[in-house]
Amino acid sequence: MGSTSARTNEGPGREGHEGHDEGLGRRDLIRRSAAIGLITVPAMGLLSACATGGGGGNDEETKAPGGPKSEKNPLGVAKGAALEAFIFKGGLGDQYAKDAEADYKATYGADVKHTGTQQVGPKLTPRFAGGNPPDVIDNSGADHLDMNKLSTQGQLQDLAALLDAPSLDDPAKKVRDTIHPSTVEKGKHGDTFDVLYYAFTIYGTWYSQKLLADKGWAYPKTLSEMVTLCGEIKKAGIAPWTYAGKFPYYVHFNLFAQIAKIGGMEKWIAIDNLEPNAWTSNDAVKEVVEHYEELAAKKYFLEGSQGLTHIQSQTAWNKGKAVFIPNGSWVENEAAPTTPADFGMAVGALFDGTGDKMPHGTLRGEPSEPYIVASKGRNPAGGMELLRIMLSKKHAQNFATKVKSLTCVMNATEGMTLSPGLASASKAFKEAGDNLISLQLQEWYPALTDEKIGGLTGQLLAGELKAADWIRKTQAECDKVAKDDAVTKFKRTV
Image (cartoon, rainbow, N blue to C red; front, side):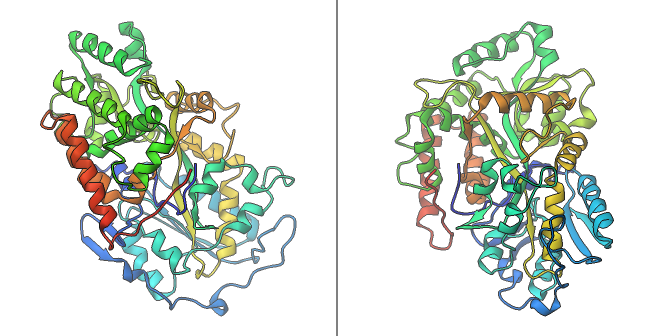
């Protein structure tokens, strides 16, 4: 399921992938693609995107010359060509990138300068403006660069050569044939593929297998079964749900995808495209939002959840104070410090509703963690080669081992002994098959979804807003953005 423009973080984006600092975390991933033309810097305010520069920059003569291309060096990396890598260091850490850099260094006899940071945008905005950007960048986190603007300015390297290069594992296969097709679709600005989303995030309802087994509870298949189970859970003295109330857009990971599953992608695409009445004319919206209204009315959320950060809500969940939490597959690594050894972390697919357009087992799964190569860096060929190294099975497996997350490399974890959460996510992904949901609204218009709609969602879950009012006000907020000429708009067809 593609788009006409690359999305900036899922991060992710992690999505995927966030720092253990309570002020950053998963919201680092979600504050993606500032379509309003700004770089989000919560601690510093907003930096004008014009600081990314428009012109200037290195010319061809300032780049390290490319070396001759060969079967083993298809991108023409010059021997001894130094490489600079700038890696977002959040919940995923950056050791996996250092490991790939070590292979680059060994192969090309070149020095690699590595920087791990959670402030990609603030540190690199002046460097792009000055014409001396690093070669390869993991552009994740709240303080990320505006990739839409950089692409428009010609600052991002076209990665078509990377896609067409032979893979390290099987030279008979091109890199493009080893990665999930949605990776290519997601990484495009127009027809140009210039963003590689390295990770693959599974979103859903997360729970403890041990807790469900100990209590004799089964993961529900339908929305109505969930409501029934919540009643049993509450009687047992446990809260059915918790969530990051300070960042209520976490709930959108499930809520939005649930609407798409029941109503179908065609109607969700109308929402992504900010079409008039896309929310108010969709029966699935009514069914899903009323479900959340019912959960709130019956007090099925852990008391005080509205005041919790993502880390605090995950910790309460780890401690057995709540059974379910909406989240993404980065949660296993991020919550590791407080997760009991026998917790049995697992994720469930979306619930069935009424007259669903997509089948049981449908899952929201999307590429995340955006990597870019600076076209005006000193060694763009080396930047692409580092990505080719990372896309090998060796490094995809290393990523899975170190950070408990999937990559965009297909079938890379087969035969591996996986951590509980990663094993569950991998299983759900395989069972979903082609029934994967990919959403754009939260990535194209983060100010709209995270702040405006997020605020409404917070009121809904606190029992302060009725479903009908949530729908009406959400439509109004989307209409405002649709009519705002200062906001760059994107369209998708699939």
